[in-house]
Image (cartoon, rainbow, N blue to C red):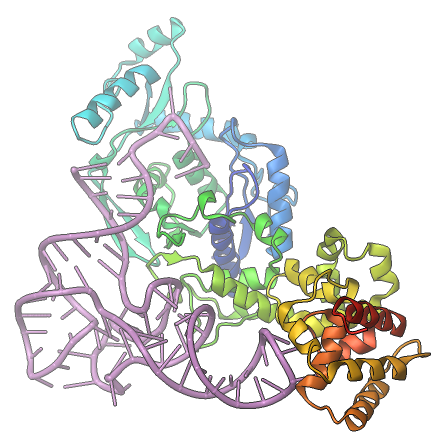
Length: 485
RNA sequence: GACCCGUUCGUCUAGCUUGGCCUAGGACAUCGGCCUUUCACGCCGACAACAGGGGUUCAAAUCCCCUACGGGUCGCCA
């Protein structure tokens, strides 16, 4: 039987990083095994689910490069893939369960149950349904329904223990009296997660359920339902949680938690995918850098660990830097473009018309940053002369050789439009001979004259990318400000 | 509280199935050095862990038991 896995998010917003990892492992497992990856939208919670959020999920998956084989928009032979479109199916199965005695109608009201629950928690014990409606007769049910009472449908925990087989955790046997009879369909007809997930996975022929291990405790309920509907349970793989730096489940209060926020912050999808793959999974060699293609080949559930992983923003950043440095420069420019425009350094028109030049600028600073959004900070040197001269730059400018170097530099570049690398280097060599200044005092004088800072990209780049007119203007302005005129 | 799951450097992890190759390997971070006309990149090095206690064994990070700690679930949320 061919392998089928699914990613089943609720459409309540952008995909959260924890879910990205779940989606990724499902995807990688499917692709590594030649199986199918299915997208199912779990929108049974009508209050929180929206169609707009569903779109966000498509966007996020597309950005990440997680393509699926079947889904709401894509179709497939096991659809529909949106749970709200499957209510008939859920009702049909529920009726069957009632007929066969696996489920029953329960007329207890929410208020009644809440009171009991409260009482239980006050007494320090877990709340388990008392079974008040477990044995109503057909007549009683008909009578109450005739009176207009609404019933929920409750599933009977019909056996004392249930075995869950998990690829990561092994076999786990759960006592069912820990949860008792549970509701599968609300009085208003809306089915409950633990129920629909089983019906859908069974009907969609899902062979492996890969999800976060926060679902592990729910699994015995689901395993019970599989048995009741006469379906073989899929193989489960409960993957460890992702924790925040404080070791609590990663959530909004830890800062960035949706893919979209990471994207906006300047992370590359390659880094996201690669980094996420390393959370609770490792390769059999000591490598850590992988392309998606390599991951598809190497991924194995056998190498997924059991313990939760703390999300390490530092390591993600490091990895992002690696991918930034390995990008084709024209592609990197496209990626940085929005950030450059937003910073006001240059507009789209300028960038497009001076593509080669801007690429040269980018090339000279790309080693310095780890986030796409950092690009403008480092590119700034090419677009603006800072108002102030830094303290260290002032020191360099105050060297007694500096004025001579700069004056000479000015005179040697005069009349030219641009310096090419060769003439820039020749000029520096000449200045070195004529002023008998070399090394730091020589280069720093020029650097500080042009940029007002001791830090920045190589002078080779700065001197050749900026037009001579700009170079001249900057040096003159700086000399004046530094009192060297 | 009950039931489940988990526990190797600060963090991600390798090793655990099939005990000896582990004086526990790699990566991020940190610190130091080298490279370099600056910053960075890169390279080299240092620091740093088997949760604790009992067994079993010639030998345990690896097997067994207990304790502790962490996490998850206990919804007419998913």
